Image 1 (cartoon, rainbow, N blue to C red):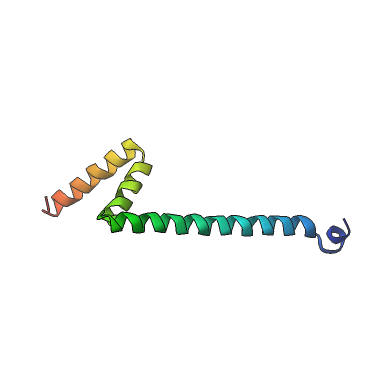
Image 2 (cartoon, rainbow, N blue to C red; image 1 turned 60 degrees about the vertical axis):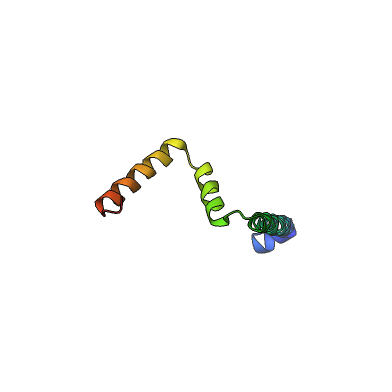
Length: 83
């Protein structure tokens, strides 16, 4: 507890938190690279990656919220004379 008295910070505990975050950041980078690789495979097989990303966003959205967003989008498009 010497370093707490001297600095007000638990040095060893802080170091453990920092190292944990660093490990998680490494894992996050590896997962991100894996996802990019999957998108590359999809593109190579002819899938439209832009549309797949839209599908992923839609799947994350609650159904009621998605329906509300679609209704507002339709309203705006009608107001602009696009539909």
